[in-house]
Length: 474
Image (tube, rainbow, N blue to C red; front, side):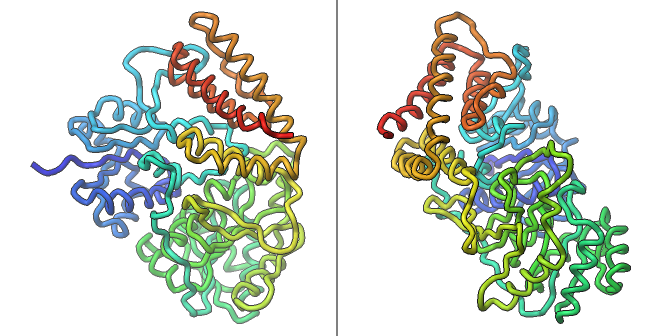
């Protein structure tokens, strides 16, 4: 009998499926004796099948049949009830991700589900609470498979320009807030063409009208390829580009994984540390604003989107294509280069002479270190280093974190004394913004353990370990 397959449940959008490709590749490389099966939406996986010939895809309608097999590993990356039910009913040597519970546990507003895996629990706790998260989604898919959170041996493609003079403009995104306007694209394409570049307008069937209008306004009717290419053909064409200019969207990840140089126009409710290009050496352009990286804007207008101008982006693109001399960074914008740190985790490095006025990058790094340490205690030096860096630059922020942790410890200690004590459903929201990422995780940890005495002890242990780093600060 053949070895048990590995099952991945990924029933979200195209971009989510493409971001799961590094996981597929890793599983195929390190578990070659096991087939990799994936349950996903046909409208998304059909185009990707030629790019992943060794992956077996199934539509969600096959979930009932999929539960009849035993799997080496079963990973659920979906929040859909169908996926939760499938994950609960199947058997596997190891399960990761959420699944329905057989009992009914709906207290304090949570659903009757249980999440397996440290990093899967962390990922779930980011729902509406990702502020200060520094982990990329693609990395979070992989981390539970490693005893130590070190992805340095996970390979990533290296971007290389084709030397063709072609510049791809990916026009669409899942939300209008995440992509430039028609006028922006038309003016950018026209400016690039005037400088001798060859702009190509790229997108799927949903962008056909957008492509026609951009082509009409720019006068580049032959440049419109929206809706004319399969995903396989799009990937092949992308490999002929010198640069792909794109919002945060599925085709961006396709270009990134195909080794195409990418300039990500990171605008609207997105965070490049979570969903930007994953490969080292790619460029991310975003507004130089402290609120950048949210997932829901509450301001009267998208100021982060307004910071982008066609002339500024064109000047940056032309400086990138010259590949010599100083890069032009448009006023009001910040340019970053993607990388991989000593643990192989996704990172963003700001380019240019401007310094970060916001504490957020250092705060993100600190909390990333904390969660790495809670998973692997050998990472304690990393937490100390990042806390000292944050303290030397923003001591008031560190003071606020320490105060918030002390309050959180006191609250949890009081609850531990009361049998069957539970936190209110909005408890994590009431905590200081500087510790809300951590309080959200603690809250999810308690919910996942059904507020048992063991769950409370684990929560207090996490709090004690984290608070200990503040004892030696002056």
